[in-house]
Length: 167
Image 1 (cartoon, helix red, strand yellow):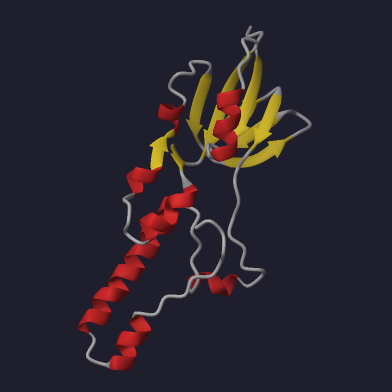
Image 2 (spheres, rainbow, N blue to C red):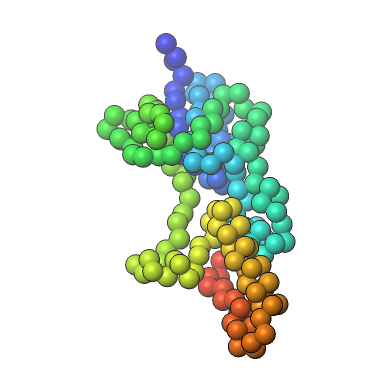
């Protein structure tokens, strides 16, 4: 039977990976769970969205980031529920028992109760978001280039950015 304590880290972003880099114990094994298999440097997502960088330039495999840590297992899976009383994390593909749980799953976009805004104001939290925005912007520029109507050209060339964070 494994005598080592099991630490489960939910999230392979800034918080989860910084914990893994700093936590060293011969008495523990660590499992990192993330719904993607890559670490994403989110502050540069705007560069992908504006075609300044390509997606692989700001994403790195989580296993690669932690490759010098044989005590860490990485699972690509999605959290469905946490049973605190039984110390279990229910994932889409697995169930993990834990002794210690680190929850570092990041944030979500908020539309302040107005979900209908999302169609017109896409968020920028993932690589998919950035690629989707880049596609929309570049296609709008292409359509504007071909537009013979001045008003339509101006409309296609207008982009509104909402938010004052790092991105």
